[in-house]
Length: 285
Ligand code: AMP
Ligand code: MN
Ligand code: MN
Ligand code: MN
Image (cartoon, rainbow, N blue to C red; front, side):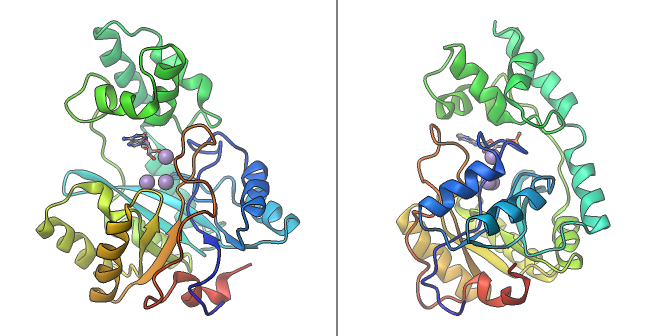
């Protein structure tokens, strides 16, 4: 696996977090779309990893373990993907457990906020969509508000209700950047900055994120992701070179009905970058 021309999809979500497909359904879909190397990266969870590995092998795909950790940095939520770690590492599991904590209380507050603008029953409504009741996420609220006809699609829900300044938004403190990176690295994995263009950071804030991430032992950045435009592939290819980071590729697929980009259908990584799977060759299963 020494080429950037490899159909690797190293970012997606199952019912273990906020996706709508099981790990087995995702594996079959990835295979049908030509994926050769796959990682399931549920938010703040590794509960689907053993199933995903088995399903990858059943479909003749190579597998890297994965997760996507929620981090608070510069008062914003940043996502750090972990790849190729030992999914049974105790420190990582405890850290993820702690990061998941507080989601139920937050969801109750979100529901209270929505009730004030006349949307009732959102907590129970969202919970119905959560395959993992310990991991109730904004995505589950979004599905409930679409189902009940309050909004046309999940994008509209986020815009009107679930982002800062809107009635269903509740600020939350996630893991620190340092902890998230160290949990991954100490479990023998690689930490990767997820979809950097999504955060709306100023150039100074972004420089701080990349610099601190590297200082803590982070080694990768997503360049080609379902959350980036083609122009952003170029921007973050340059950032990968500037910061000497390995480059990753992943759809961030959540659902056949909601996701714009399907598993395994993104452009190749730009050729001048070193892909994360080259550095993780001995962690591929
Ligand atoms: P949470 O971890 O509960 O804050 O939820 C974050 C999740 O919401 C992300 O992982 C995305 O799946 C989803 N999300 C965030 N922003 C948007 C958006 N603008 N449109 C659709 N989904 C979004
Ligand atoms: Mn998500
Ligand atoms: Mn993310
Ligand atoms: Mn994601």
